[in-house]
Length: 144
Image (cartoon, rainbow, N blue to C red):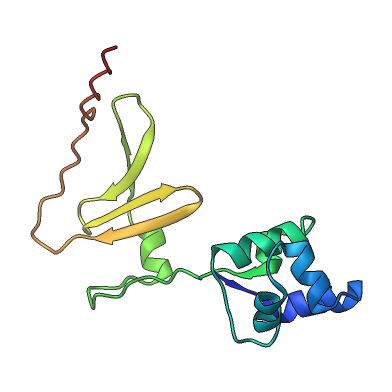
């Protein structure tokens, strides 16, 4: 995550702030604010926290350039979107009857959806697919 300096410069100009005023609003030194505005400093907890403090009504998505996740390609078989739609993904539920994944054993595909993202795993041909559910061991309670 890096600060979106172009957008922040626009905000500073709209407000008519000098580097000194930006520094005061951010709670950092004038030198730090000046280095950031000149592109000589790109981040750090103090600077990022200061930007959130100086621009409380701005979203994180506008103040910062967020990393974009990309799939890892391990040169395994890739399916087209049409092929994936034709697969028979069977629901896999946990002990509480909650859906945790979908699986197509014939084509060796497991699909896990969590927090709005879907991940598909391709299992090498000839490998059995097993889904094992278990409760993690509970942590011992602290004795007082």
